Every structure is written in C-alpha cells, then in structure tokens.
Image (cartoon, rainbow, N blue to C red; front, side, top):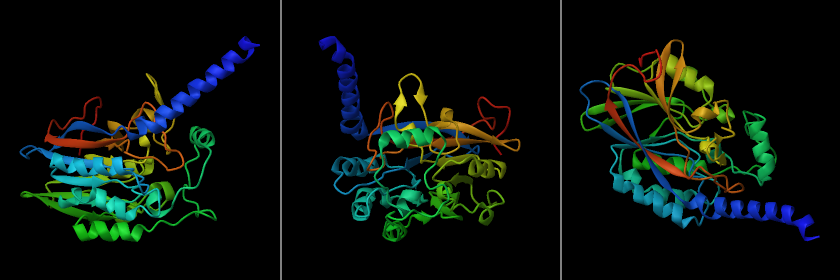
Length: 319
C-alpha cells in the first residue's frame, strides 16, 4: 500500500516545493543584468541606459519597491521604461513612488497591455498551455466583459510631470550632456495599438544616435524598426519565458518571437539590415501567475559604446 502511493505523493511534494520556490523565493530575487552593446557611432562617449520593464506592480509589494528605488544608485545617463508597470488598479501611487528616484534622470516610456487593462484570474497550467499553443492574450481583440481598466492616465501624468518622454506611436529625443538621443516608440503590438505608419521613415538626421522602443517584440515591429535603419531596439513583455527549464530555456515568449531570443541581447535582420535588440525579462509577473522559475526578475543596465559597424554573427551591417 505504501509503495502504491509513494510515487504520486513524491511527485506532488516535488511540485509543491517547486511552486513554493518559484513564488516565494525566485519571484522576489531581483537581479541586475549588465550588457555592453557596441552600437554607437565612432567618437561618442559610452552611454549607460537603464531599462526597466514589466514591473506588474501590486499594492503592497514592498521589496520590489525598495529594489526599484535602489536602482537610482547606478546613476544611468537615461532610463527607458518598456511598459506593463501595473497589475493592480490600486498600484499607480506605489509605482510612481518606487520609480521616483529614477525619474530624477532623463527618461522615456511606452505602455503595455497591463498598463491599460488589469489581469483576470487564470489557471496557471491553462495559461502556460495557451502560450505554448501560440495564443497571445488579447491579441487585438476588444477586452472581454469583466476586464478591469487600469487608471493608466495617472501613470502617464506622473511620468510626464517628471519630464519622461511619452513614446506612444511617436518620436521624441533626450539631451544627454551635449548629445541628442533620438527615440521612436510604438504603443503595444500585443493588443494591436501599434501604428508604425505614424513614425515610419527611419531615424531623423539631427540626433547623434537613435533607437526604437516597444513593449512587445512582435516580428512586425522588429522588422519595421530594423528595415528603417534603427541600430538598437529595446523591448520587454516576454518575462524571459517566466517559467523556464534549466539547461534548456524558455517554452514560450507570449508573442511570435522565437524562444532563442526571449531575453537578453541578440540581433534582428530584415530587408538586408541588422539591428541589435535587447529584450528585458522584466521584474514582475501577472498577479494571478506570480511565479518565476529559472528566470529571476531583472532590470538591465546597458552600456552603449562605439563599435565596429558589423554585427557579430551576421553578414549584415548596422545601418
């Protein structure tokens, strides 16, 4: 009788231990990723860019808030926020408070679907199966009955008041110690709010360096930025796969990007041009699927430096 129940009990205990670890420990084990990107034109000094993404703030997440405040100690040249700041309609004041020290620096932002709409309770197993099947959330459909509309306007107003540049389907720029950084942003492709036609045409002539910014790294957006000649694209959304298999990697990206590029620095090629792309694994998760496994929450400090025009591992050249 004991042998009959030993295996299923062991499996259940292992699963419970894994869940406790992923929710109670790893999802709160915040990390800083450091990446060097050889992308600037010759003669420019290195620029330190802090990318924060997918905070998914829930009211009361004190450890996350303390960690976000501490990032100001990095003294970046500027900050890029790639969206999905909220996972709770009550989370706007705490998000703005946590990001307050970072808003002392020049910055820019785009929004993600969870800034606009609150999450609904989901079965975590069903959620994972749907992502493996290629079902990507709202994916452009109207929000279902019962979906909470988050008070994103307050978040926008707070960022704007601090001087951060709103890149919602528009262009902007930052002045960084004698340099002008051109920024072109899109609203979230995950819910088909992106309007690339409004910003098409490639980097403008004035800035010393230009980059593209978008929340979800859908291929149509990456293709458009790359074909238009942007040498660097920053995105978030994927959570790095969120639940990964050690020594294998991510199972899903929650968009049409391949899992090999689910997080970190890689390249993207379109119409004969190649761009560097950095996808942040983010520092939060949907409040109803709050686990992380083999994929700790993170922010990234990217150091942009002058480098060879040729992108490693490709035959293309950064435009």
